[in-house]
Length: 269
Image 1 (cartoon, rainbow, N blue to C red):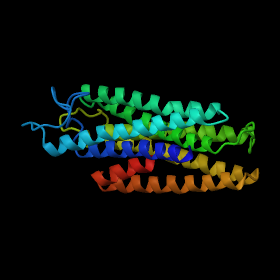
Image 2 (spheres, rainbow, N blue to C red):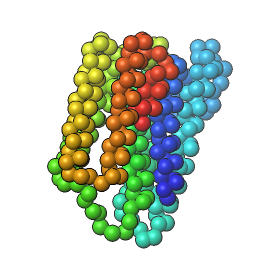
Image 3 (cartoon, rainbow, N blue to C red):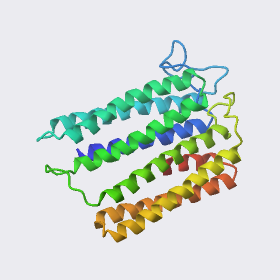
Image 4 (tube, helix red, strand yellow):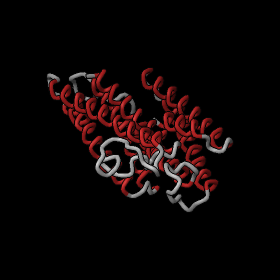
């Protein structure tokens, strides 16, 4: 169960990263219809207006959905077969295939609306939620059979919850930077009518707010003598956030090169 849950996290993260490759290569409308690639053809076909490479980049991302479906389905079957049955594990496993179906619908809407910026943002943010829920599934796979045991007080949990809200806003602001930036997924796609510097500043401000909350959280965890496992997770989070912030700064300074965009999405996951 745990191995399948880890595979679900990797699959959800992987399809988000390959989705960014579709966007930065301008292949978002390589297959301009849904669910077919072209009218009358499920697979790429020679077309005078769409380069074959762009067709295959977009089509490959669609094919990866099959792998995500198989892993999500296997997670649900394994959770249902677990004895004794665990409610949290089953709920989280059920979310995976439901999330894949939702993403397929959102992806179809994204293509049919010509990659309008808000649909791309929703598509990405739902992927981040599914990655997060996949990590919860990994955690649930190692739960014991006893009742939940709180390892820190309500004040610490409240600080974590508040910082999570700020993190969600940070991710959402990141999609606005992308929506206003040069990588639309297709050259003809209209961009968000706000200057990149303004939304990039908002994104950076939210990053500093999140880092400030993490510093406060670190002092709080030390004060309450939090368990070592929790402090290890906190340290890993700090490293990831600092690395992601540095990467974002480099990305902005260099004019948003394509490779760094996909690396930034990988950092998000």
